[in-house]
Amino acid sequence: MWRCSCGGLLDLDGVRAAYEGFVAGDGPWSLWRYRAALPTIDGWEAVSLGEGMTPVAALRPGVTVKLDFLMPTLSYKDRGAVVLVAHAAALGVRRVVADSSGNAGTAIAAYARRAGIEAEVFVPAATSAKKVAQLQHYGATVRQVPGERAAAAEAAIDRVESSGAFYASHVYNPLFFQGTKTFAFELWEQHGGRLPSTVVLPAGNGTLLLGAAAGFTELVAAGLAARAPRLVAVQAQRCAPLGAAWRGQPPAAVEPTVAEGIAIAHPPRLAAMLAAVVASGGRVVEVSEEAIARARTGLAAAGIDVEPTAAAAWAAVDHLDEGESDGGVLVALSGAGLKAPAA
Ligand SMILES: *Cc1c(COP(=O)(O)O)cnc(C)c1O
Image: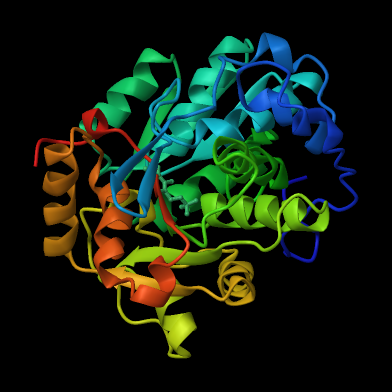
C-alpha cells in the first residue's frame, strides 16, 4: 500500500525516537549511528554501504557547505534509499518499482541490487545520460518515458497497480523521509551539538527539505538544540510551484530547467513543504538559469564540482540578507558534478 485508499499521502506516526543513542557520538561511522531515532529495521547492516557522515567545508566566512553528494551513488538520496530498501528487504519484497529524475532511482537501484531485489526504474527521456548509465550498471530495468517528470511517475504507478510490485517511491513512502532526517542529526553532531541559524536546501519533491525539517524539529523536541534553523528552500525560476505557493500565487507555467533534480511541477507534498518553510521562519528563493550556471562554475573554482541542481542551492546564497546570514549559513550540496554534462 503506497497511499491511502482515499488517495491521500501516508505519513509515519509514533516513531519513538531515542536520542541517547547518538548523543554519546558512538555507533557506526554512517547514518546508522542515529538508528535509535529511526524506525526499527531488521537486517539494515546487510543493505548499508556506509552512507552518511558527509563532510562540511567552510567556503566563505559564515558560510559552510555540506558535501552531501559524497555518498555511495553520489547524491544525498542514498540517505532515504537505504532506509526504504532495507525496510522493503525486511518485508521480504522481491521486486520494486521507482520513478525519478535520475538520482532517487539510482539510489534505489543500488541498494535494491545489494539486497537482492529486482528494480524497475522509470525516468524522463531527457534524464542525463550519465544517470541512465549508472542505473544500468546497477542492473536496474530502465524505462525512459517521453514527456515531463510527471509522465514517468504516472508510468511507474501504472506498473505498480498492474504488477503488484512494491512502489519504492521517495515521494510517497514515508520511510524515505526517515532516512533524510539524518542530514539534520549529522549537522548537529558536526557542529559540536549546535545548529546553524539558516540552512539552504534545493527543493523539488521536498524529500531533503521535509526530512531535514523533521530532524531539526526532533532535535529541538529532545532538548538537544535551542531552535531549529530557518529553512531556505531553493527552486529554479523556471519551475517554482513552492515559490508560487510561498507568495500566495497560483503556480506559473513550467519551463525546462538545467536543474533537473528539482524540476517538479506538481509536488504531491507541496502543502507540507510550505508548512515546513513557514514554521521554520524561512522562505523560498528562486534562481535563474544563469545564476545556476554561475554557481556551478563558482563552486568548481572553490574545488567542488556539483551537478546543476545542487549548484542552484549555492546560487541562493547571494540572495540572503544580513539577518539570514547571522549565526551561520549551511548549504546542502546534493548531487555530484560527474552525473551531469560538462558546463
Ligand atoms: C532529488 C534531488 C534534489 C531535490 O530533492 P527533492 O526531494 O525533489 O526535493 C536536489 N538535488 C539533487 C541532486 C537531487 O537528486
